[in-house]
Amino acid sequence: ALVEPLERAAAEKPFLGICLGMQAMLEHSEENDGVDTLGLIPGRVRRFPAGLEENGVPLKIPHMGWNQVRQSPHPLWAGIPQDTRFYFVHSYYADPLQPDHVLGRTRYGIEFASAIGRDNLFAVQFHPEKSQQAGLQLLANFMTWNP
Image (cartoon, rainbow, N blue to C red; front, side, top):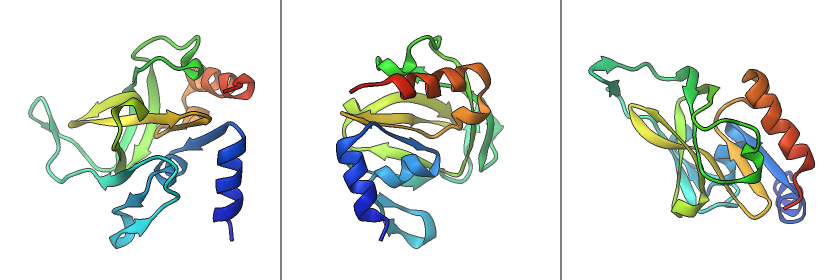
């Protein structure tokens, strides 16, 4: 019952997905033995593989804590320095099919899309509401965004 209003809103208004909201924008998720999602952006949601390492150091899943985002040009990044750190909590990551839908990248054992979007859609894997000034700036940019 919620899919139709979400699809209508995503077609007509600026639309922001946060964390699971970002994952729901893709077509399919590996979570819960596989589930189809909204399909607003072509791609899949994948689980971080076991045995992730960074510089020989084992990494825990879920990915929890502060990490850098390498931004691609987009109005919602205005006033936010490149490689700013945002707060993450997740075990799954977005894998969009089209590279031009990737608007931010983060490294956690592997490089993954930490921000995606197209047209009036923008989504982030991190939590802007927990990411101090940079997160508040992103939310403020969204409030005035007119795609």
